[in-house]
Length: 333
Image (cartoon, rainbow, N blue to C red; front, side, top):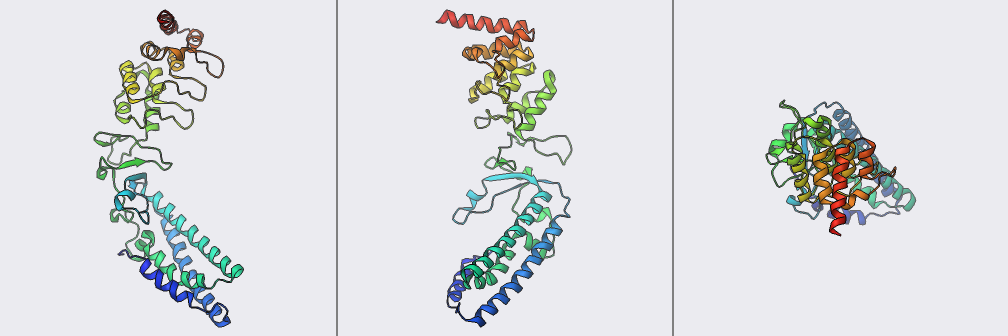
């Protein structure tokens, strides 16, 4: 359905509505009747749309741009894409449309009965159908095509259609990690979905000493190198410090160059040095203690410094690295 500028309709409607006699009982009666009929039809259409949307089982991953701002450019509106599944986005949009339609009716009726406003009834009687016609979900239903992802009714993109200029976020606004070739994919099937940075971090940690660090390093940049997981506040440098996988020392140096902060703490109050101490990662201990030896005196929530932690876990090689680092610091002073 072609787009139109609502202002060309709204302005004449507002001018005509202002000429209505808000004190005339006949005018008030017919304004109420017209509004009631039109809004009843609108609610029925929106409700039917929501029921149809709930039947969608399409789990194809798509990237949806935000709605265009009234005074923004098209480029501004589509710079950031939200990762979601097609079915979930249609259901969410239909649910929001149903809620906004019902709220609009309650608000307009409230103004009419408590403030005596007749103009609002007249305006919404005309504009209600126009607002519905402009909605892409309603348009898809009324045209008979239904909700087909290939129609791109939300102007969404697939992973292959994203460009380097497109920023991708998840449903909560967190950046989605992408490699230089586009999206990072999980699995080998054609329906593989992109991974968030949190998923990449947790997957890397789960693989332990056998982890391949390439995916994680490709995903990190200056903007997200200090990202912390939602549940435990783990950061990339903590994951690397505790892994003990080949190449962690070099990887830590790279993330530090990106601006990664060693001082950040997880929910236990551990910084990256605590992680290295607890997991006995000598290679990371050498790099970290040389970079920020002052963090060796930081205590976690239980009062343990990284050296205390290493001794407690019998990771004597790490404790020796930390002790040497503190000794060198004292000599420098």
